[in-house]
Image (cartoon, rainbow, N blue to C red):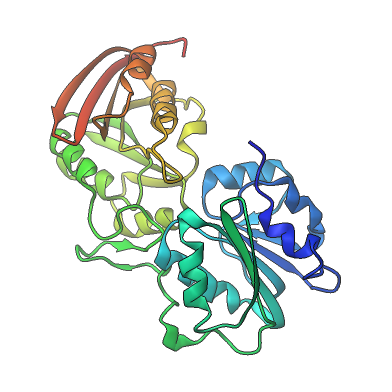
Length: 338
């Protein structure tokens, strides 16, 4: 499938010009050949999701998880989280120079219509164009900072959730541990030892439970793709045995030494629809980084078809616990040729 270049339409149709726009900031884009339209020396790409960062880097772009400075033009690609989108807009607007413009691109399924409707209360939106089940809009030139009374600032800042852990709206299940992780945590006591990896560690809750209930853990690596969740995990998990790593879990190479145990509550979608290939990639990664006698413990939605990939990657698997929604699976002894 070709990447959608909807964000370029204001320039292709002559509504906006890159000539004299000044430095350009592009926030959370998907890797896209259209980014090559911008002069590299004047382009800053901001992204915190490691798989996208790695692809953008391979395309030759310089990428930072949090941009600094002021820009003449900013292009924001929205996420699926409403509060995160609002905070991204406010933060990006405040990074514009006076007279700068903000371009906002998003799919209808991600809430672009309601987001633009709310934005018009606070900032003049010049025009919108509809294409490919989404919209791209751009503002009038900036005259004033984004209004504090909108309450849009701060949703991306780390703050204590009801349980006292540092999280933000950009993360998965920021208010409480999700039920899948809670079920997996119930079976962990006494099952972990030595070198452990937590794939897709989020803001660190599962790793904390593993450390608290398994004194034989000598070290645990929390592998997490979202940069802000990495920052939260470093604040939440202060046990000296823990190391938090910003990385794409599915692209990990076999370490030396390999891990004794791997735990995971893998993601099952990046868009709106479930995508079993994500969990399957986590299963393959776990097999790749484990010792020959290693064990992998994962939780998943019961309806997701992971059994074939588990059998392909491991010599023995069993269901340890299940509910009407979730299943906890233990896989033992990774196969050498996967």
